[in-house]
Length: 127
Image (cartoon, helix red, strand yellow):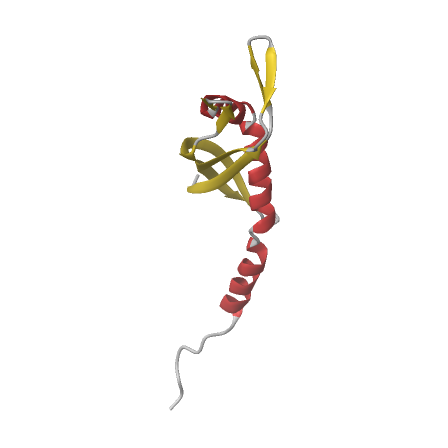
């Protein structure tokens, strides 16, 4: 079965809190991070001419790692975000595969090609 490799850029932004000892500390500014997900998708075409993909994450490349600033301490949250992505991988990829199927419309393109190849082609000109 054919497959497609794609890179999907993601920007993460969020406010949260972290537990240090017995205290919960919240950040005032949003934590931001940028990453690129390298995905591999198996491709198939359904009976109604929709593109069906089944994607898996092959690699996560961090462009800007998420860092929580607490007073004078910077906590890198990369490992926590990686764990959350792993935990939510199935849900995220299911949504992505669904969007690909809805956005890429094969039927219209296939119908045009089908109609074009049905037109007669003159093979020999009369003199």
